[in-house]
Image (cartoon, rainbow, N blue to C red; front, side, top):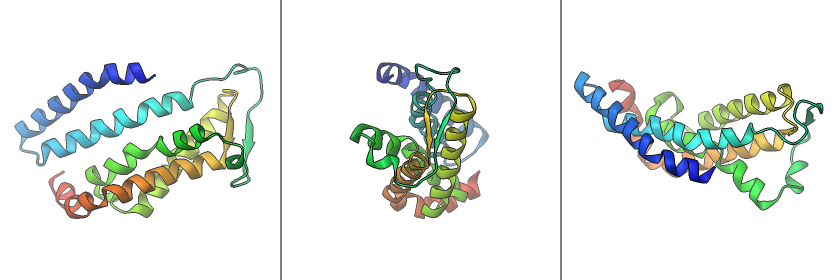
Amino acid sequence: MVLITVAVLPLAALAAWALARRRSATGTTPAWRMSLAEVGIVYGTVPWVWMIMLPGGGAGTVSGRVNLVPLQDLLTMSTGQVVGNLLVFTALGFLGPLRFAALASVPRILVFAAGCSVLLETAQYVLRLDRVSSVDDVLLNAAGAGLAAAASRRWWRTTAGAIYRAA
């Protein structure tokens, strides 16, 4: 997965360049910031979602498992699982407020990321991917996005309004 993600980086850069050129030609500003944010959100989120949606060994034959008790799975997760769950929506949390003024607050990012995570966990269950759909995954995914939004706050507090007016 890492190799594929790195291999696709030139395509992501080309997509950002093409979007920015197109926006510049139509007079949309700030073309580069908007284009880089959009491509960055997709490039930074899709590989994680791909990994989440990979089927387990018993996919299609075992019924889905659900854990709705908060913090119960967290105690049994490995450090890698915790870090991975925190990283799922970090690109969205970091770049979302830079691109979309409606997401320019940490609470909004938390709610949006939690909603996206609930959709993923529901899909895992419905598609019978032999994975556990857990509320702890939702909490960690949203927390990662919230931490990333807080880390980028310096930039989106001053630019979100300008981007929103330009779009």
